[in-house]
Amino acid sequence: MDDSQRHLRLAGVIRLTLGGGRGPKDAYVFDPHRLALPSWACALEDGPAALLVTLDRHLDLVVPAAPGAVPDRSAGLRALDEHARWALDVRNYDHVLAAMEAGLVGDALVLARARPKGTYAGDVYVDSRGRSHRLVVVPTVDRAAEAYNAPAPGDTVREVLEAAERVLLDVDLDCFTSLSDADPTTVLPWPRSVIREYLLPPGSETFWEAVLDRCVALTLAREPHHCGGLLASGELFQDVAEVLFRELLRTEPP
Image (cartoon, rainbow, N blue to C red; front, side, top):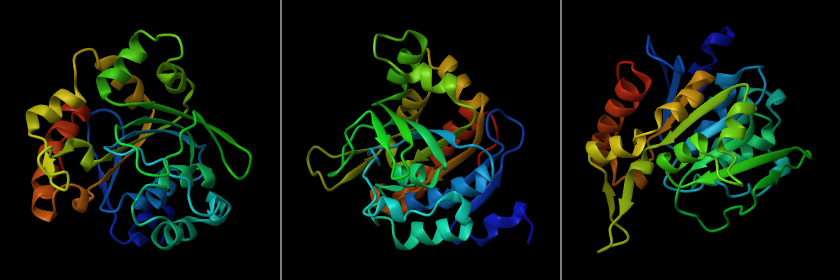
């Protein structure tokens, strides 16, 4: 099996080739978000570490239980895949810092609004190998676009994007959900119009151009248990795909 077919060994990961459009030519779709780790390894191959731009409801910035035990990317795809499935947290909150430990991700631009227990709170994460990684956190696309277009003192969105040689765009489907005020255990998927308002707010085109210009792959986590269950997440995926693929990436939805 040649390197172009390595993804076939990743159980539960669907690789899509995106025709035409703009931005990445490959997409990886899976359920548990921790499978982003081997997917990023597959997408990046032997090239340099990438800037991660991730859209999520949760800040998946929990430090892995054993940071030094995360295999370096040189250990190969199988080692990273096994580590993601058997060693990372089943809550799917520690894969971003694990990818930094592995040398796959350099800095991260995180668009998320909820802080799980144990979320790393610093602006810089120093991994177990001594490498520093900037963590730029903003809650929404419109705030990221504002910080990119007209940076205020301390804003680093433009800085990390301009410094990036390559970009990984990562989307968790639960980014497009909210918890019910009446019952905090109930997840409310967003309608397509709200998804569009979030992903494509006025003034965001220059921000998206900067992200997509050097984007080598899209990863998309479906996380049905965070999206109201299998049926609800399936319907939400269809709405998100229409906006994400057809309107943002300008290609046909899967």
